Length: 256
Image (cartoon, rainbow, N blue to C red; front, side, top):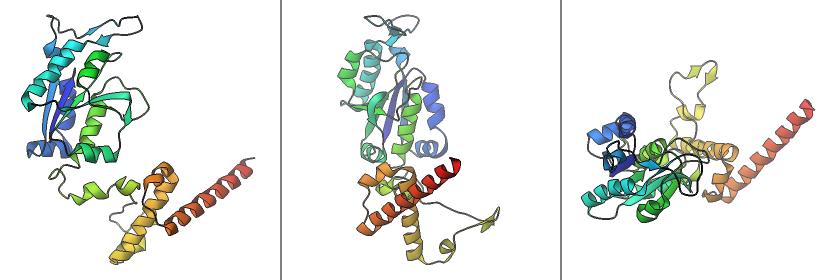
């Protein structure tokens, strides 16, 4: 997997990605990272890449030509029009399924905007995917790009020391991950659930599945619409929702 990032702050991308798991994967050549400075393609001595938007308005806009030339430098290397992701709050919200699908690409380009955005014409010319990491505004696309690259990297063979962990963590099967415990067996008078120390793999798997369903029903019920639950599990979820609703009503009565 080859990551290419079009940015005004290449050092931010390089410092963030060359650490931890992604840093190890880059060192071991499972990933490559190229941070392209858009300012290197400016056509003035001050490397200015922004200007005022037509029609007025607050802020400055990144110009089309430097962005296009920076992108073109990558396209020439890959000898094709690479899949190009523009990080924007207006895009489709990134999720695990998208990470898994994008991990199949040989090259991925991330375009990081700044100021009030980028000239629409170059977006129409080069962008294949408009993606958001959430409904909030950041100062630029660098952090979202690193979030996506970190998630996508975990789906690339060889990046994780245990490939299974990339498949069984949170959001696998549209369920949140079950709670995990380590030594000691008791901490602050809280004990590790006995089933996890039983050595009975089937019971452990059953408990973990149940806990994943409970957590998802409580914290991310929207994910359950796409989760593959049995009728029995759906009945269990409905019982949980009913129980929690009754408990919440009881609390409100006490407060009243």
